[in-house]
Image (cartoon, rainbow, N blue to C red):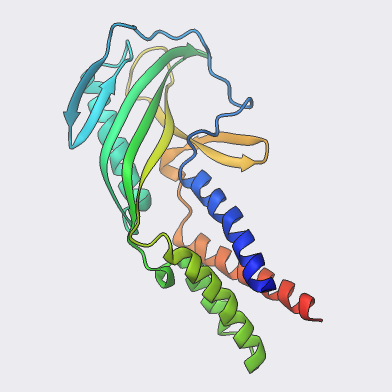
Length: 232
């Protein structure tokens, strides 16, 4: 019971952090403030489809051709970051809250899509890292305890396998001048700590498989040590 309870408790915290780090919408805090003086044109609201994406453009400076280009780039980044282990479809994007801030032109982008996890629990790099540590253990009792820890994580992850959910992401586009140009960044909100989030480049957003394997090894050893201390 102690193992199951601690696993469930950790999983909830861990998955919340993962969701924040792979979907940081709703985590804009006082650390990152918006300029309330926007240049959106209230009567402008063009809606159209491009590259399979439903797009709404409410910004003043961004033309429909601009947002078509940015929408495709954002969609491609989703596939690059998560397409190997997820089915991502039915994209909808809204460009709005255009403003001048710190000598830059900025605009918000709200992304919505359907997200289906297609990676079996045992295929996750996080679980693979745990199994690597399990192989190092000596003795039947220790191996049994290690297998129980991994089994708990597999059970939790199995609840997400082949489940489709609506996913939301808030991004920002920053232009390095007060005009639309090719010199821009697409940024996302990434979990920082309990105080809130911070902006980071969206193309460097996802943790690599190697990072997740290392995290799995670390978490496995932490759990193992906790359970061994409990048994003493």
